[in-house]
Image 1 (cartoon, rainbow, N blue to C red):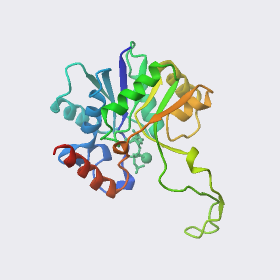
Image 2: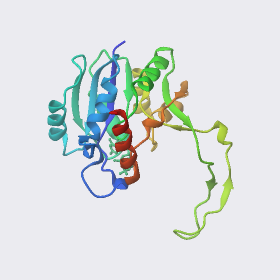
Image 3: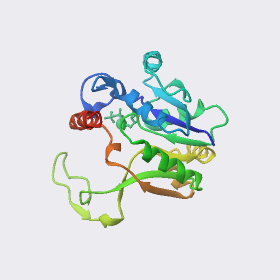
Image 4: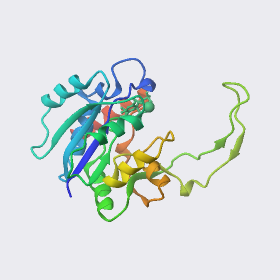
Length: 235
Ligand code: CTP
Ligand code: MG
């Protein structure tokens, strides 16, 4: 089954601070988005990459992709994104041609995911899961809190969930295409990942081992880490 990857890259990157849209910021000289596209194209199963660009940046993204060689086997499309990540993914899905029955959804903000993780996700979808998430155990203990009485004030702690049963999830998340399309048609709540929409349908969602290097570039310190990981790979 040919696999397509949808890459939401339309976010501004507010938490990263002032500058270009996050996906266009460079890591060791190459835009984050190009690293992310290469990470998907590194899998031999992936034959199409759909990049969901900042709404006013589709032409710029298209020329970036034209300028950076991808493997011969990989086609790409660029579509403009939306207001939320969810809407951007939906716009990417709408652009998918027929024939790709497995779809990966991968954040441009996770540029360094290793190909073995990508392939493990694809394999688990082939094994029959409706949705597959790469996931890691948590290093920190997690507390549930109530909102503070005043902004910036102390928050009452109400619970400490058993950490051994919690996972931090990454991307690419992998899907049976029809299941993901149905989820995006049906679920209208605000969600922060695609697998949670499939969970709401009652379909089987499984976690496979994620990878440290699939971390999300969110805050300025993450840029430092990403550039250090890239530098180490070149050694
Ligand atoms: N994304 C998107 N369209 C949006 C918002 C987010 O395609 N309207 C994408 C981002 O480009 C990113 C991924 O969703 O690749 C994960 O989102 P996040 O890390 O939150 O990125 P941003 O929304 O850009 O960052 P911030 O929340 O700090 O503004
Ligand atoms: Mg965001």
